[in-house]
Length: 352
Image (cartoon, rainbow, N blue to C red):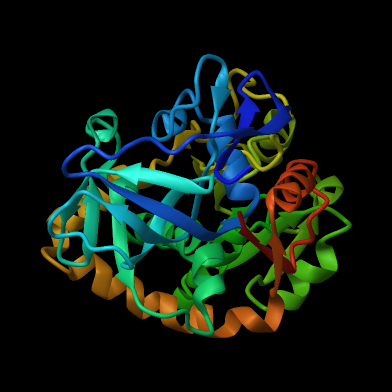
């Protein structure tokens, strides 16, 4: 099977398979990229969980009832019918779990944007591809962490702009998830509040060992743990009973409740009225648009990159990269991440 797509059943994420994907002829202005490698984390499961609501399925259509989960990685131009887009160029960006992607490239300052008609109404941040050179030592860490770090960067910036809504503690659920880790790192760097991580008993030692949290509390300790209020909550778990437990624990002392992800993807959602602040969903592309306007050309990139550099430099201390090759490995890795078997201290890089 020379070229293939990894597809999932939108109604049952456990039902997934690799299917042949014949390579289409290129129209004028198109190019075909061969995917070299991509990262797979719990964040990609969140893309699937919110695939309909946030239109993540629309980036890489897969037919009725099926979806291709977006991932972040690297690809090389394999064939081109675009006069300014030569074969051999290498790009970091948003790809499907597939061997190939056909794009309609429009040159940008840092690479290209995919101007394919079906992506025109989708959030522009996901259509941007960055030109890169030969692989560097931290390239895998970039694929694993950079898309998650920018979400943490934007959340921390939002909270700081609002003076943490008066909170003395910022509480993060799913504290071992890589997006939560990136946020914890940045809140701790700012130093304006205590950073409290909520996690499973299995992951408590790992979360404590990061050194990014001032306090680590297991989920069964939430009701009684001595957490200083007022509290701002950032929920990466998407678990309605857990969300209710935190809201009930703090009541009116919970001054802001930010919903981000769905790492507990099978958990009950919704939950009705809650004590304390009303939960508000955080959508990173909206924040990107605001800060791009506020800070002008290059301003967002400059601030983000300054925050990213110390984080990625420290990442090899707590995360080991594990590389796997081939479609069988992709399928096995997907099930491992879906079922929560992948350890928080490892990062999976897959080669189709």
